[in-house]
Length: 239
Image (cartoon, rainbow, N blue to C red):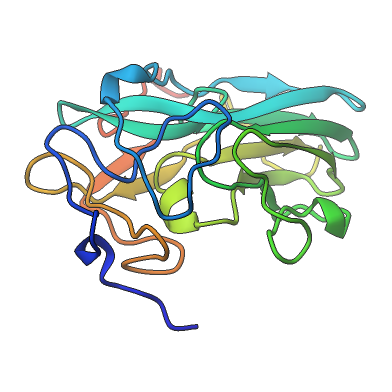
């Protein structure tokens, strides 16, 4: 399908100092498609580091996509997050478990959750236009996710991946199984990402109606580990 790559060249697409026209912050109110409203970067909470959420068979977890902000190269920029965290909380389950995920969309773009690598019922696969309709701003969707395989997987939207994933909507799934991972002293999940930052310190804008660089993203110039541009880990000798 032909993609419009002019992006910022359309009328009304002018960028403003200190904000970015593709950051939107509304409380459950859908905006006109393509009409994107700038917001003050400090109107959203700062995203904390990701946490681990253990779930047992039959448990229910609320996952909420909402605006946050992160400091990248000394500048606070608006982003999106699951449950306020970038990456989203790492969901840890045992192989064979089945859990309920209640997704609420509090950003101003349609979204969904795709369970990448998980073999599950097709209606819960989270692909808009194929297995479900995208969840509109203010909308909800209940996923029932079963984990038949051990290992590490991830979850993310499959609607405007170039924007939603780039801005922080992703997280890990760790499925425990005796034969899934070798025994170690400590397990640390690393999520590698990057973001394209302009010379003035703001993210290079995304297209309003379509991707400007590539269908599912673009090559960034700032590397992120677990959402941090300067992630560090302390280890003990012999660990």
